[in-house]
Image (cartoon, rainbow, N blue to C red; front, side, top):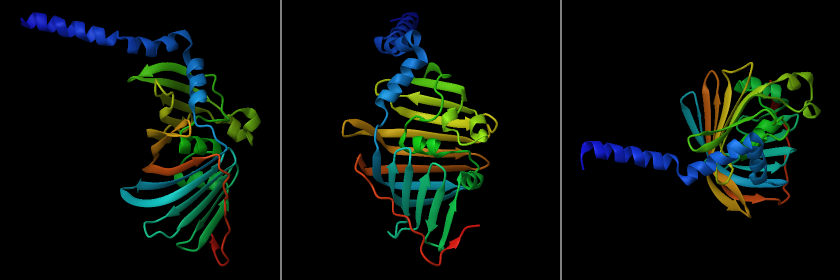
Length: 270
């Protein structure tokens, strides 16, 4: 076969692949129904629960320093997030309780505690999160209390992509005027078969140098639902903070306890 015939054959092969039924199938819903279709499929297939608990092992990286730890997480949907962190020695070091409007933690290493709001944590991490963003990123779901009518739909590297530069908190869920004025830029990449979120990022329009990212892999069935057992979270600001977590012993819709008591003699964090 001559070089010209080989070249023409490769071009024909490329065209056949590019126009394959799979590629046509992934493009069809975008052309016909757009972002509304993708959002409906996202909501239909995202994790549904009232209670969730799991164990995890995690690697933490910040300013070139790395640490590893184990932990437990318990969630009462849209209400409470409880996290216990245990170094490899097996003794609890930190316990965290997060609600819609407060954050508390106990540090057993230095006998201190903190009770406050999101302002302190956002200032410490140089972020701008609330309970809804935190919960969604932790478990790989969409934001529950934000507008979803201004997204554009597309295809990016074989994944469905939803993107917007105008996502705001629904007014009925905004606790103050400052919350209602925040505008977020967000991207969501969906698996074209399961419609599960594989990648997402969010940043505030006025603070584009600060971005939260998350990725979700290794989906397994919990009951009749898919849950990502491997998640990676990244905060990109003046320095980058990265946490990679592997989840195990996941259960949903089993009521949980959220024990949190500050021991006598512990000092408040100023």
